[in-house]
Amino acid sequence: MYKAGKGNIPYWIIVIDEYADIISKLGRRSKQEFESHIQRIAQKGRSAGIHLVISTQIPRKEVVSGLIR
Image (cartoon, rainbow, N blue to C red; front, side, top):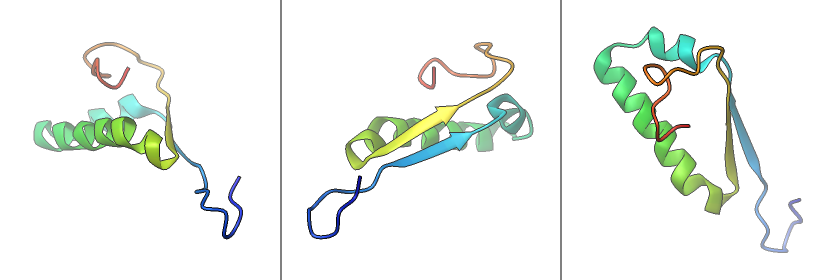
């Protein structure tokens, strides 16, 4: 955990519930932008102490891209 003056950074956990519902409400371009941001956070965030928890009831490939899984 974070201690002042120790150089440690706090962990962040980002929770996205009902991912499929969010994606289904977006247009094509907005969906691509949203997924791009999520992928970037997943790839780069770990080194900054950022972790993602994404849940959905519909884990089909049409809804959740391979890079997100």
